[in-house]
Amino acid sequence: MQNIYGITLEKLEKYFIDKNDKKFKATQVFEWVYKKRVNSFDDMKNVSKETINELKEDFYFEKLEIVKKLEDVDVIKYLFKLKDGNTIEAVLMNHDYGLSICISTQVGCNMGCKFCESGRRKKVRNLEVYEMVTQILMVESDINKRLSHIVLMGIGEPFDNYDNVIDFIDIVNSGKGIDIGSRHITVSTCGIVPKIKKFTNFDKQVNLAISLHAPNNEIRSSIMNINKVYPIEDIIEAVKEYIAKTNRRVTFEYIMLKGVNDTVECAIELSQLLKGLNAYVNLIPYNETSHIEYKKSSKDTIMKFFDVLKRNGIQVTIRREFGSKVNAACGQLRSHYEEV
Ligand code: SAH
Image (cartoon, rainbow, N blue to C red; front, side, top):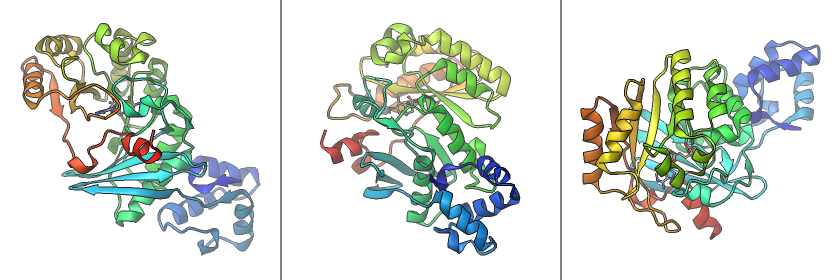
């Protein structure tokens, strides 16, 4: 038995073909699930009784449980409980360009970034495809609106759950599925170089964001364990290949940590590192969390850093901060709920 929300259209077509049945039935089922949003096979009006009975033997409908919801101006943070009792988070943000959701890809994370609450808790397991897809469906049904953008920047490292993430993107992007444009989907990675290379050959025009957070290996290795395996020069080389092959602009995320990576020297070094790349830097005001000692840089420091990048010809933006009630860093809601 498989959760219906975990299967791509192509795999569902194969399911029917393997049964010597008609491939188009997969499209019918997909449209009932994602366009009409039915919650049972019995509601699929143009599907034969026989097929419905077969589907019932192999698939079931099950979503997640919303256990907590925190709301503030333009943002709602959701805590979901999974079937095995683990919890994950998703954050809905109301931007001027549309409704965007930040979803989780794993329970916990093994990348060990020192500033990150999700990484403080080790990885328990990868999320199944349906556990990512239903984060979208449940939020859409909760607010009774369709989302326009997805970022894979919640709990977990998407490239440490590569195959499931690719299937997830397939389902949400499919015109017969949730139908969110590939240019409106962003995958964020801490820099797993072999997977960046693999992603370069992925046939959808999905955005790539790299959590850089430092202009050199010394600082980066002191805050991100992954840098000891894949240092900055390897990341830049992989990003160059990605840009050459896809012609797409890459985002570098850069958390501003007080006294760690936020000096003018760092900004100059970062400008030199990224000069000439089709990329832009997204400066992220750090969300402080009670378990971790890092502090956020002041607004003034962030502005100075921004100005240096600008003056050096680097495209740069500063990430908007959302309401203070839910300002908690990603992973904090889960920690608070589980009291660890
Ligand atoms: N593992 C992936 C995606 C999840 S983290 C990655 O590393 O990109 C999403 C982004 O949030 C990353 O850039 C991460 O470094 C950043 N982040 C983690 N903790 C944060 C915090 N407390 N405040 C602000 N950003 C944070």
